[in-house]
Length: 312
Image (cartoon, rainbow, N blue to C red):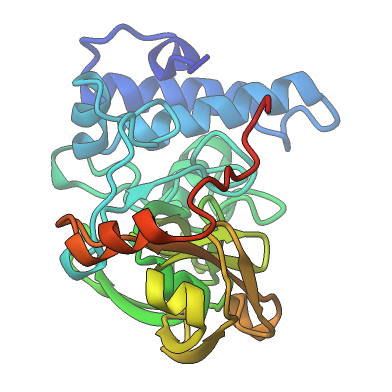
């Protein structure tokens, strides 16, 4: 279950920006790990209070949380997914150390209520005296990770591709999609997330891939499967036909006497050249009834042949 940042700071939902800052200052002064060294419970409460301050002191994030658009960790309540040509919708995710704001302090942009940015070093100096910058590097923090989903075509997932996407804050991000990725796989782009605080390192961009299905190809592990229609003549006499693969069309030899369901193997034509492609033949008769074929079957010596059937 999602936690409540208002409860973490001990304030109501109508709290003003000054009340939010005052509540955080009070809790930080009491719970800071330098004040209570070795007290794990206090440290966890301090982290939670810091994450709450990180969210509620940012006017935009606070408004989005109040409207139910994001949860207490800054994650979208509805994951947006767009086609690559339209860009990808990104959102702030949990920072290092959990609770959405880095290890022990607000993430980038924290404290921007009414447009006034709070300097974390100033806050701790006010609390613990001049020269105190957070203790043990707590004021220098890693930026937030940003998380988003990206829809990609089946062939791009199999063969690899490059995509340029537009993030919600206006900047663009170039993504190299490795060959062979699958739906649900997450790409981590180091240093492409939110900026660090007080000289801390930038967060990462976490890209969850969603692979769109292909109208003809199916993937099973490293192998590709395809149903291929052939004519009655090709099935009876055999033929060479063009068969699509994930790397382009190839010439495929159809053995004489092939039936629907016969599977041919194209070695090395699977995902990234590692697997194979399996082609399942389907004999297709013309949609319009063929009078010559009807006359032939009436005179055919094996007219009474009954193929194997389930339960027979």
